[in-house]
Structure formats: structure tokens, C-alpha cells
Image (cartoon, rainbow over all chains, first blue to last red; front, side):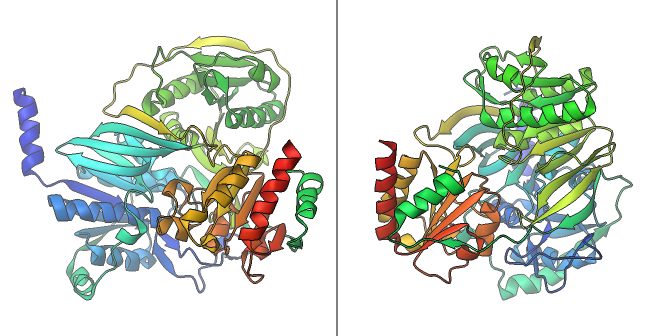
Length: 264
Length: 317
């Protein structure tokens, strides 16, 4: 171990691991999706907002690192004041502090660039984003943020083991998984598998009470232009009714799939 | 000026997702009157590149490195984009395509638009239709940058042949050091992956337990299909997470999706909505899946599925 390595070793040992979890405020998975103002805006009427599920898997993993290794967990979102309830929920789940960058973002690039501005001011050892948000499904914030920060990025992350600054990670790929070695600092795109559904933390009364005392800071956004803008929305056209086939008429089903749908 | 496509390959041959991207890129190149330039790694098979209209192909020899390397791949693509002064770059929506897209976009100062399902409606600026809200809706998005990276949704454009004579260029595989190193790749080799499959057979709670999964597997085998499952099934540990399809699981965009004993929760339907033809087999005629399906059988999976498997088997013999 060179003196330099020794210094890094000491720093990692003594310093608290600083984790940033990026949170997106999204419509509940059961939401009916409607648009308003001539299909140019999402209609939030009657829609319940939740922590983006992929972000919540990441947050849960971060809380485990807080509980086991004493890591400090900061959650951040880019959004208007309507996002604060989910940030309070993150605090109730166990995050130490929350940041809200006060901006209604136009696209994923704008989000990534605003987050990068935060990460340039404070060093984070581990930055967790979700694989994608379930509203715009862009799947771009993690990779863009990492590239803007010149940090490595692991997409579709399904395992994360940190020992000192040596990190073992796994990435889900089509038809299997990739096992990687990494070092901190690192950005990951969290998804199911990183923790399981049953591991998600339901805030208890103590957590909810404590969350009220924890800091939730509002930060002014940097001046950054988005790279794209959504012009209009459209719902899929109504499909025709299902063609029912009798349970005894398997040949009829095969015939339809072969000759009508042409998929066999 | 050129249109750039990243063509994924396996064992030297372009993959289907790569050829769909080439087909899409060719259509853009024709609309703009530009050449189509492909980028790939260790591609040796040229016939497909010619058949799908690639004019120039930068082939990067990774010099024996067999594993995907996100840093070096994205850098290699970015270098070709800059060299060719391309304003449009297309990647697929495979796990590697979606991984590379945003990184290439930042490296080349481009906008990144994912989940693209149609050709651009305008080119200056680029405006294109994309899915959003996990296939529950579409939007028209406009790029505000001079350069745009598009990630094309699988199976949304299809394969369209167009003859060309490809010129092979030896690209330089950039040597970049990274703290990120692939140690090993674990692939389920004897099965079709959900991403690559033309047909997906999926099981839900109606199958009553993991011991009955041979029904799904037998049908999938005779169809050459991938197997999938609903969220409750993976949550209960009946099947691995990698098979979970739906809003928080894998997306499916197959030609044919057969749902057996799956009720059709809104989150499940969102994830499989991009599939072209949907078939449901369920005992409950009120199951929401019947509203989303094209064909349906109200019946007991334990009776219907073995019969279907047998009939299909007899048909292929």
C-alpha cells in the first residue's frame, strides 16, 4: 500500500459514505392517464403521486447502507412544491435530508444537468437514480448525470456490494446478467432485484414524526436549457373487442393466429 | 453529413435489433438524402449490412476483448458521430442500446429521445412520436439540439430490406481506462430472452404454483417462445425476477403475447401493451385482460394449454 493508497483507505474508513438518491415524483402505477388543455399537459386531477418505484428500490438499498455502514443519505428531486410530500416520505423512510431543486423540468437532460450542478458542489460517493421513471420512461438521467460528472455508470443495477471503496455490481442484460467490479464514486440505475418488493420500508409513526424535523432545502435551479420538449400527448386508439374462442375449439384459435393475425 | 446507426452483433453477425435500427436509419437517410453509416464491434458478416442498406460501416476490432464495455463503446460511437458530422444517431432499445444512448448524447452534445416508435414527422427540428407512461400514452417530442440520438423501441418499425454495397472501414477501438470492469457474463443460453423473442408465453397466479410451470414451458418450447410471468408470481418466488414483465419489470414488445392465468392488472397490461397480438386464457371471463386482448379463451389453463401445446406440436411435425 503506497502512502497515497493508505490515505484513501483512511479517508474511506473514517469518513461517512455520502449517498445521493435521485427521486422522481410519478403517478401511482394504477393511475388512469388523461391529458388536458388540448392534449398538451398531463391531467393530474384525481391522480395520486408516489416515489418512482425504481427510485424506491434504490432508496431502500441506500437506507441499508446507512443502517449497516453509517452512510449519510440525501434525497433530491427536481420539481415544484407539489413534489414535497414524496420527499417527506423519503425522510420518513429514513433519508437524512432532502433537497428540492425548484424547477418544473422539461426533459431528462434538464434533470441530469440540474443534478450535476448539485453534485459538483458536494462530493457524493454513490449516486443512485432509478432505471427509468414510470411516467416518461426516458431511462436517461443516470447515464447523463454520470457522463456529465465523468463518473462510471451501471444501468439496470440488480446487485451492489460495497467493501471499502471496492464495489461489486451486477447489471441485468437481455437474457442474463453481467457481473462487474467498480470503485467509488459510482452512479447506478436501480431497479427491482437491487432489493426486493418485500424489502421496501413502510414508514412507521416514529419515522413520520422524525421526518418533520429533518431538513428539506429548496435550491434555486441553474440556468440550463432542456434538450427537447414534449409538444402533444395522445392516448392509444381504442382497440376492438376480444374475439372469444370456445375452450374446445383449439384448432379455431390456431387458425386465427396463423391466418388472421399471421403470428404463427 | 450522415445518419449513424449502432448495429449490435453477436458472434460477428448483426442482431435483429441492429437490423431494425439499420432499416429505420435507412429510411431517415433516404428522407434526408444522406448516406447511412453503421458502427459496430467485431462484425464480420457483411451480407446483412448490404441487405439493409448500410453504405459505410465502421467496424471496431476490440482486439480480443469479448465483453461489452460501456465507456469504450460509447466513446467509439461518439468519435464516428463527430467524424461524420452526423445530426441523427439511432440506437436500439436493447439493454445495451438504452445504456449507450444517453451517454453518447452527452458526449456528442445531442438531445436524446428514447422509446421512439415511428419515423420523425419533421427533421429540422427533429420531431418524433414516442411512448410514455409505460405504453399508456404517446407523445410528440421535439429536439431542441442540432444533433439528436434516437432510441428505437423494439419491433416498432420492423425489418425493411434495401440493397446497398457496404464499404468497410476499420475503426479504432478507443483505449480508455475505467474503474468499471466486467468480470463475467452469465447468460441463460438454452432459452430465448424476452427482449429477443417473437413470441412470449406468460403465466400468472392462475397456475396455482411453480410446480405447474411445465404448462408454460412446454408451450413456449413448441413455439420457440420466451417465458415470462406476472408480478405476484415473481414476488412469491415462483419464478425469477428476470421473468417479471410489467411496469416495474421487463417491457415486452413481441409479435405474439400469450397470457395464461394472468388477470391483467393495469401495471401488467402497461408493460406488455407494445406487443402486436395478445391472447388470454383465463377461467374468469371478467378478468381485465379480456379487454386488452385480441383473442381469448374462457377456460381452465390446465385443460386448454396442454391441448394447445399438443396441437401446435402436431402441426410442426
